[in-house]
Length: 314
Image 1 (cartoon, rainbow, N blue to C red):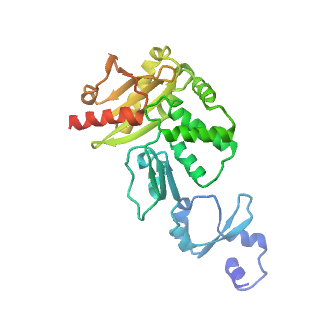
Image 2 (tube, rainbow, N blue to C red):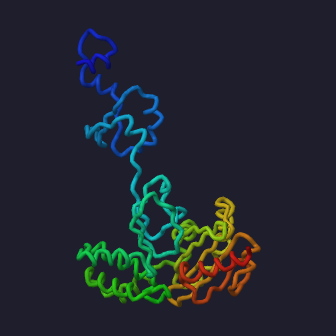
């Protein structure tokens, strides 16, 4: 009753209705971001607020002090360990584990965490191993996605990153989802559309990773195709899109690997620092295009070569 009088603003008269009370009580939906309301909470004289679900039904209360110092979101980095490759806002989260197969570039953590970085061809292999080691059989749909990840990352075991563990994990997953992995792998790679069917954003940003090497920022995108015949027609617009990203993101180098999954060979478009580009140890095909030969792995083949160039250039 005292609460009702406070809401009404006096100590007499009729008691307020439930609707009147609800209109004066601060309420937030449970899926709203705390940071979006922090300033309002700071200005509020209320010590607590009501929390509702999306339909407006009460689910609990939150104290002002909890809203001003909310617990950090917990985040597991999977298939990467660098904040530059993580989701937006990752620097504000508490990193509780890492599961990856790339080079180390991880941020410091406040406490020891499970940290798995193994030299396998696919992080899907590491996920499958954790399931198998715990005698957990994933649903067919999840097993199929993990198998697809291994077959795609290793180009059906043709990539130099392929390990015996990748093959073993793929065999186990193929039994779970009841697929013949080599036949399925061929279908998976053949499903890769040509460059003509891909948008510029899909080509440039669909599979792109950022790196900091020797104090400079570089970015490497990779797109898989089933032939290079459509590349020449798209080179001018690709170069324009790359130049835009180099300028906007202040990149020293931006590389676009075009990998033919049928022949196991790659070409590469490069934009950025002319001094660094001049040191590329690849066959120059003219303009910004280079022949990478049988290089198909960004992680194991291209990145080490670029690191060497950057270190040599000082």
